[in-house]
Length: 238
Image (cartoon, rainbow, N blue to C red; front, side, top):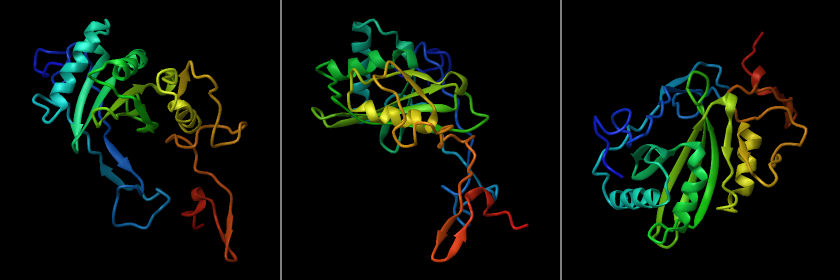
C-alpha cells in the first residue's frame, strides 16, 4: 500500500481512494483524568484526546512489507484500495480503518492469503466517542497471525442512526459472542450474525448501557449498613 502523499487519496495521509477519519476531540469524566475523586463524571472533567495522525511511509518494522502484501492481495481479489480509508500507527501498533461494506471480504483475505495468515480474531469491541463526533460508533477488530506472530487492528466507523456492520462470524467464529456483546452494550447491529441477542443484559432490557447517551440511573445499594445512592444522585446534595 503506497505511502500517503498530497496527491494520493482524498486528503493527505489517506490511501488512494480513502477518506480521513474524523478525530475525537476530548475525553470527559473520571477515566484518564487525574487529580479528582469525582467518580460520577458530573464535575465536568475534561482531557484533550490523543488522536494518532494518519501514518506516512516508511511505517517501520514489518508494517511496510505487510501493507504492500495486503494491497497486492486486495488487488488480486478485486477489492478497491479505498476500502482502507486510513492507516495509523501508535505505540508500535498498526490500525487499518476500513469501509464497513468491505470488512467481511478484508477479513477473509487476511485469513486466507498464505503470506498474511491472520487466523485468529481475538477480540471484537465497540466504542462510542460521544455526541459531536461524526460516525461516533466504532467497531474494533484485533487480529492475530499465529503463523507470523503479528497483530493488527481493523476499525470500522458508523453513524449512530445507521449502526449496521456485516458480521464476520462466518470468517472468524470467535467473533460470535463478542459481536453479541457489542450489540448489547452499544447497539451496533451485526448483519448476518446467526443469533444476535443480548449476552450480558436481560433480553427485555431497554437501551445499550455503554453508549455515552445512556442515562446513569441505577438503584440504591446497601453496604455495611450505609445506603449508597445510584450514580446520577451521588452529587445531588440538596
